[in-house]
Length: 183
Length: 230
Image 1 (cartoon, one colour):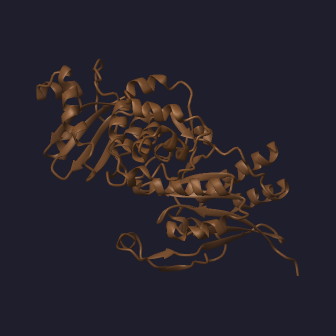
Image 2 (cartoon, rainbow over the protein chains, first blue to last red):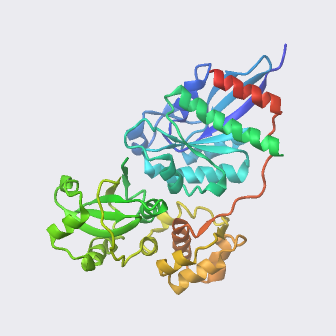
Image 3 (cartoon, rainbow over the protein chains, first blue to last red):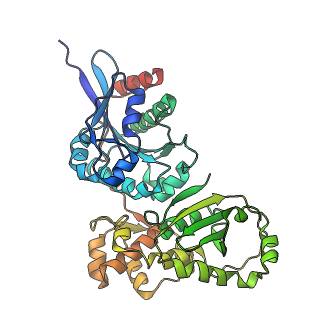
């Protein structure tokens, strides 16, 4: 039997940024979730269940390869999982809830975490652009202190929209392609 | 598109940074516990502040010069409103804000007593340890100075202590080193670094180390093609 090689992209970001939805939208399998009831009153006010270990979705590439999308838990108390999931990742997508500036600083902390440990290509998805009070990707970039020189594009995303999720993945893959060609 | 948030989690330094970045114009509305204040913003500068009893009233006056006439406020006294309704309130953390871009028609020729750079620094001096830790989150962080920042620093009117912190940023020293070598308390150093980041005079130093993508080009192209087909 042929061994299927797994290629990994990590989807990280603060609590309730839309990571599970993002994976769900493009995964060919029902996203495997490790959810538990939210603990704190603040978390409960946002959603009832939250990822505690990881989510993963899968896209079959050919007979020998599968692309895995791993979603990390959002809360920093689970940051040991970020470390585990980041290992061997081809690229990283950081999702941010563009309607909730209270999570922007946490998003920057997550970017710093992955940048310092896994210097692989990264894009930021300014998610929930379908909602009326979403900050623009440009304003999200400013709030996250992401300058042009950092080489991290901040893209408009709506995780419920397949084309939008595909576009985010393609932008990341194109950065990886450019890095391959230039190295 | 309005930018909205809570001062508890997105403080004045952060708000001013976003306003200054693209030299935005519009109205910043802050609903404090005691009053609601409208701040009139032109090209990234806060010109005027006025308390409002009904929010909709802010949006009925679309011509700034006519509004000043109506309120009998001279252009020369605009800065006093900024002092009274903004600078004196920079330490109050409870309130929600919304910034509506565009919308109001401004004339020209308004004197700016408090440039946005100065407001950023003034606001940074009120940051709590918890607030500064959101950006100065690690004492091993390293910052570097950007080119052509003297004009911004001049407008910011930084103190000798802040000047000292700035002089120690060289792309090599970590936050830990700057704290130690400055001889200043940690909070003063961190507030100054937070302000410099918001001013855009320093930035996080990027790690040079880059990992070569661990994938063959033909496989990567196959993945790209597959994603396109989804």
